Image (cartoon, rainbow, N blue to C red; front, side):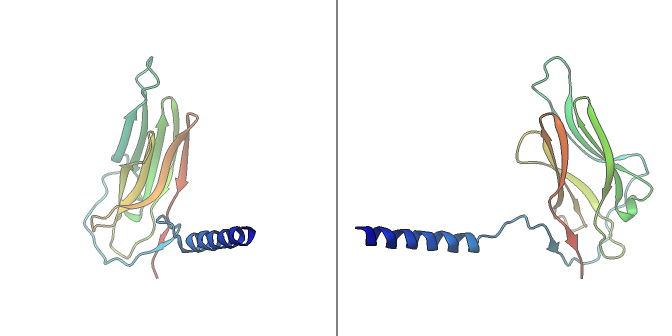
Length: 156
């Protein structure tokens, strides 16, 4: 009985190790992308909203407050530099958003998409081919806003 039990444990252990070694994450921290040069979008004038995502905070019945992510154009938006405004109720933060460098003449368009959970927003971009490429994830943890880079893009 003990030899059979030992053999079974070794077999299961080997199977688990092989499964773990063969698993790969779909959200690789670094992705190499080769894309054709496309110039289909021109950023608006500095100070205008390029994209906005908002969701009403339903736990706050007293105030009409929102979880809101806004991308605002700057004088450097044609080179991928934007202002990012993050709000959760009265907690408001602003920071710079820098999109990756793409081949010449390609202007990246910032895009916002809903995250998997409530009060989450994915920040990404479209280089002109209609494909959303995620870059950051905005979440709310204990009423605090968190911005985390999830992907990195580069060209050879």
